[in-house]
Image (tube, rainbow, N blue to C red):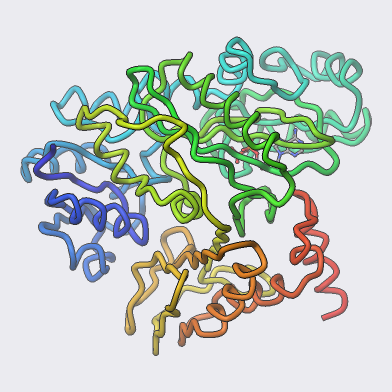
Length: 450
Ligand code: ADP
């Protein structure tokens, strides 16, 4: 096992990884920007090293500074968390070249899945159903038009290097195609330095269902069930739950089997998530994330595994040690992403915390690095806490979530807690009858009536 691990991240996920390491007796090194010097994960780490000024490009994305910190603190391994460098294949390769272990998949798998066109081809080749669309990149409008005619409108233009919903534009008719193509390519070039786009059939009312995979790279793979992440705003997840209220047990096992068999055939190692859209009883692969996900706790709550510990164990060379039949699911879990944002407009609202009170009790988990008096910096993602609730069934989970949201006090800042409370009383959410477009409609309606 590793003696010391550097955590190349910040905020709640840095603390989450640190907690797993501490339980395993592994020492931790926190790296941080100047503005994060007082952060909770920095305070609790065994060692802390400042790697640069607040802008992420100069600190959390500063590969040289991170590798230097790893060298001087003499760590064995680096955990990238999510975001920042977690899906940067070149970073993973450099970590290994410098003699450290990258706690994650191989650089080759990160590179493959980071190219969404290549990823779709690779999984289709091992039997995973994908969304109808262009075979590869669309070169120009003529090319796009030909594919769109064939699969039928509406279509969605997507960025091959895409992430975070950027570089994605829908076209409902031939008249909209040219502009959508241009906008998607421009956005993709600006966000990822790569304007390559492809085309997919735009599904009118699917659910986003993703399967959590855990693999040791030696052919042992399990799936840890699915998460339903259909509650989205601007293609970004807001609330996630497991299991999905839309699937029955047969469908659940079927998609789990497809995903884990594909991961085994690809020789995948570490945690990974295969994302699907699900409509009219059919699953369509959209992408694979080669990292720990923000929403991983809902899976942990229903299967009782610590995903970070499993990642660390596998990276240290341990075999998985269990098979699919050993995985037991219990109850229902829901996660609310709590952001430092205005709950109506979702405008970022960083600031200093006053009083802080965390909900507790049976089945309640809060993953956060907040504390009273903490200053939320304006330089990073606005996610400040994740409230995760587990119940024996979905109804118990919902009642507990309402109670926990009521108890949660974050003074001094605007947060999205009031938004989550509104959501909890919407009949469509209570009944589990929502698709990926529902939340935007709900917010639109609310703005009109509110
Ligand atoms: P990103 O990597 O930018 O997050 P994804 O491919 O994971 O992009 O898609 C993000 C979200 O966009 C999905 O969860 C879904 O809501 C929506 N989406 C993606 N592809 C389609 C599609 N073909 N039809 C309808 N919605 C889609």
